[in-house]
Length: 585
Image (cartoon, rainbow, N blue to C red; front, side, top):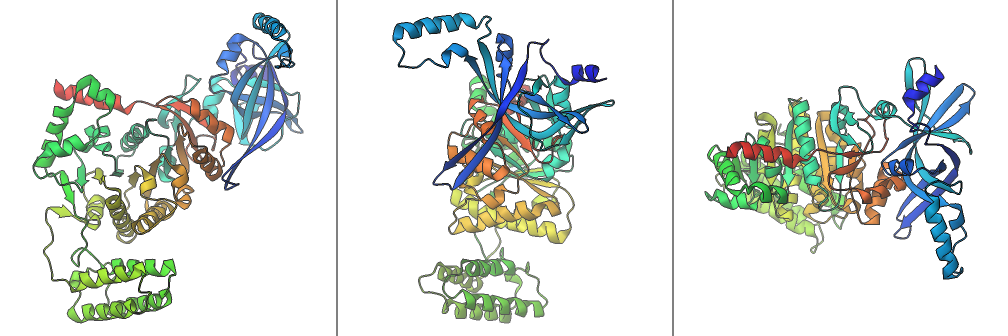
């Protein structure tokens, strides 16, 4: 049994992969005076030098270290992070040796790689936290924290063993596992239901990957609705085949000149070079505009669009800041809430629906509070703005532009499955996000809407920064609330950002699946290592990734949880290229 099962579990390259464990080492990195710290505990292995083995080990590789236990032989599973060719004669070579002798050494070393007892390969590998056991029914994996023993024999996992380790049967395909002829498949419900992060520097293909994820999830989950908060203007093109039957909202004013909107949308360079799609895009967006699928966003607040809850939230924000006079504001807020509760008015009641005596009560309370906060406090302006809205002359609602609150209701109750909100001004984007996400979560709570929704935040550091001021505070809180509470109401999120270290860490820690590409700043990598308990040596390998290659890790969606895997994902642009070429014909 053991021999046949070993032949299935391990691929030692016809005996050429021969390795043993040399020892376990620990490495700790700090940055910014210890603000971020990451510790790597890794195994050092020694393998017989073989040029084919050495080349193969440059691909992501999983290995198994033999370990005797009281219940029999098990194999501790590790992931190789780096390989180094070693030569005995090079250990003593340094600059103190005369040049002529060094050259003789190097010439002898160069000849030795073809076959010598003086050469070997050093491998560095990190634990996956799992052990493999060979049983009559096949390969079995279980969580395991045992330490391997020095000198133990090491095997290279076979294709079948890697597939058993990572892939969910009949799961959602994510991409090809690097170094293996395997499609990584994951549990779609777990991937969607526990929030997703996409982290990478400019040019790594974050929007391409995110659009691909949206497309896959919409195909897999027919009832799923998706909304994208888009600052860069990329998703109308990335999801062109989908959005033509969806809705686009924008804060930009273009009137009937749809070409202005079309030219504001980013076209990937390869598409622009290959098929020059400007006229095709203008035609598609023109048709959407004629069908009422490209709409204006109205960010103006008025008694028509605002509710009592907006007043409550503004006062609660003043209390949360704990600046001078906040106790008086807290007491006043309690009195206001009690007054309207006794009147039988819900917090989502529109200000425009209040009776005159109710408005007078609210204005008088706000005027009283204005005199109790510090005269230089930002709270003064906030209270004055509320009073102005309450006392302004009634105005007609703009039938051609929807408020964030109205779009939230339409998104949840309408038939269209995909919405894109294009807000290129970051200040306006944060105002929209705060109001839209707050109303979206509230409606999910009180209306009992059971369909699943996915909120995608592109350039998420703009919506949920770590350090907040003004409108950033409300936006960051709204994003955090969505990620912390949304799962209970079937509201999920994708966070895409290139500046992880600038993100709200409370929001980051809600993510259970994430994709990482090249991040040149060490503190961004350290934040990920610290936030997600990911070994830093694995993260360092992301610097070697090409566009379209990602490190993927999930606490929930893979067969064995929390195992890092490098994948090559599909190119979303190929789908858009085919779609545009078909329309041209």
